[in-house]
Image 1 (cartoon, rainbow, N blue to C red):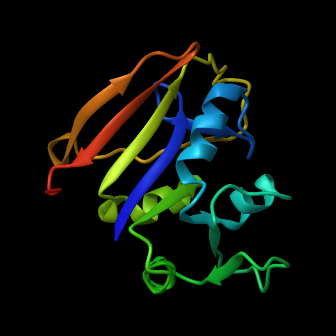
Image 2: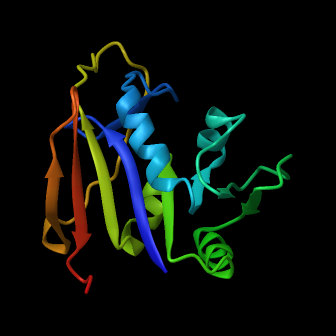
Length: 166
């Protein structure tokens, strides 16, 4: 099973401000939804709730310490990253995507086989934001950028592979 992070972030790794994504790039949303459409996804409770009523992906593994249940036939609760990975493995999927938020991305960082990163051109006033959520830093020696798709207006997509990938 391949584990892939999919994220949109600024050059300085900001993925959200005050629990909201401040930019709006419909082409990025479309490519993202298309990429994960037929696959199980792992995401945190806040991210899951922000995507209702129709979160992307075929099956949703909601990682939460406090969420008791979900009112959806496509969603399952996981209490830990290990529990989420075990649930994903039971689904017999070749690829599972991690959709965030910040703590979820960080929890799985050592496990990723690939990262698909939309790097958005969006200025953020760091002084006026009470809370900035960032994608975790990674060890450059452990990763290699394999390609870049810069055909979009306002963002590019960087494709990364773990140096341990075959």
